[in-house]
Image (cartoon, rainbow, N blue to C red; front, side, top):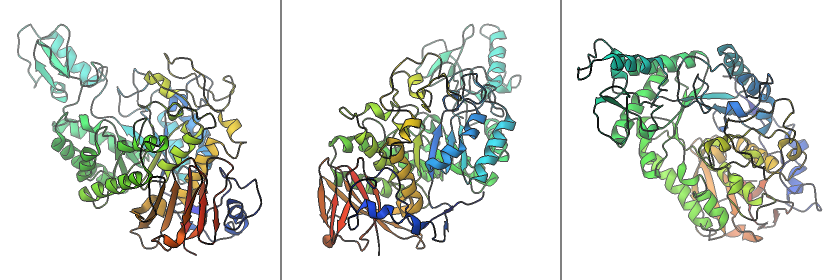
Amino acid sequence: MKKRMIGLLLVTVLGTAMLAGGCKKGSQRELSQMQSVNESIEPVEMSDSCRNSYEIFVASFYDSDGDGIGDLKGVDEKLDYIEDLGADEIWLMPICPSPSYHKYDVTDYMAVDKSYGSVSDFKALVADCHKRGIRVLTDLVINHTSSEHPWFQKAKSYLEKLPKGAKADYGKCPYLKYYHFIKDDTDRTGYAKLSGTDYAYEARFWEGMPDLNLDQQKVRNEIAKVTQYWTDLGVDGFRLDATTSYYTGQNSKNIGFMTWLDKTVKRQNPGAYLVGEAWTDSMTYSSFYRSGIDSFFDFDFAGNDGFIAKTVRGNMKADDFGSSMVMMQDRIAKNSETGIDAPFYTNHDMARSAGYYSQDDKGEKTKFAQGLNLMMSGNAFLYYGEEIGMKGSGIDENKRAPMQWTADQKEKGMTKGPVGMEKFQMKFSPLDQQKKDPYSIYNYVRQAFRIRRNFPAVARGEVVVDQGLSNDKILVIEKKPKDTSLSPVVLVYNMSDKQQSIDLRKMAFPEKKLSGVLTVNQKEIELAKDQLVMPGRSIAVLTRD
């Protein structure tokens, strides 16, 4: 894949107070004046120093043909937007044929759902992404298939024709071994009865999603064909769905299977990136790194009850937030020398973040939470629409609402959203309006992505907390990459809603030049001599002179 080029210094143009107030020493306005200098600096290769990943539910993203359903051509048409936002990787939620709106019950692993377009459309999208240096991940759903998948249908047909009381002959129907069929007429947790037969089958999510028998070599061979197929089409890796359910309650077997899967995919593409969903406690999902899988989503920090939301509400102290990042870093390192954290704040299974905070009409808490997520080390993930503070809670369909490009629902590209989605009003303005506001949620997120890209240590640095300066309101951390070619940075967080002053003479790290800022309103971060003055809910990036 072609590598993108970026400048050495941050161009501070968005989401800050640079447009108001006088020019002050070390202020954000002064940073904005560095723009003309930055544009003349010889760029450096971004390579793998940063990954800003953007999760897309294709059906609700952008409609290219006017049928009200988002499609792959629609994603392709919006690559300018994705690139300008600052994302260098997209994760496409399932795109294979499926009877459901969410498509996590696949009927054909080597095809594209007709509502999304064609394989040719997918190949064109990947090619256009790669021209821009954007990587492409697809969802790999292999814990289960749809009950309408031909494998299951053949097994089902055989059992339905089997005489009452007769024993199944696995030689006559090899697809029986693709799933977990048992001869049982009692209710068993995690199993669904096959109507009209003496058999039941494992289906941990619901009866329309029969679990695959991942111990079977034939099933693994099928999976290897699937990953090879998409690898040949140019994908750069996979998001692994429901890894804790591969073998429910058997984590050692989950790790063993993922070890096989990682080796299989890496033989097909040594540069492939795999990120797993393990919705469980961090002690468990950190142990999954032993499999060799590159990343696992960091659920401890995510959602309405995660560390990010708790910190924004003031229910978690600033220094405790720093300690939590170190804890996660240490747990990953204990299980893998190459593991990369995958921080995220929300996803398609969670209520959207615009509903997390009361009295947040200006979106300042919503912005700051995104800042906490996107300043974490690892490969950061952003769910589409979160960059503009979209709403969506309750039933799953609500969490996959149409991307709000504009308030005019009849405008080109607007989608209808999933069937069954409830009607509700968005809290914040649509994208076309937010683009015009330098203090919008959109421009804040865009700025955060640029900080990650221009300061690779933000994404790749190991966290060290300055215990002397950090307290319940202030967090000071150094991020020092293992790669000595990357310069360290210091991040200073004011987690409170009040202005705070930090005496940099007492800071344990040598980085003391104000080089990047994230603020939630027009109030500026200022550096005068050794005093860093920070408005409420702000983040400063310090480098060495």
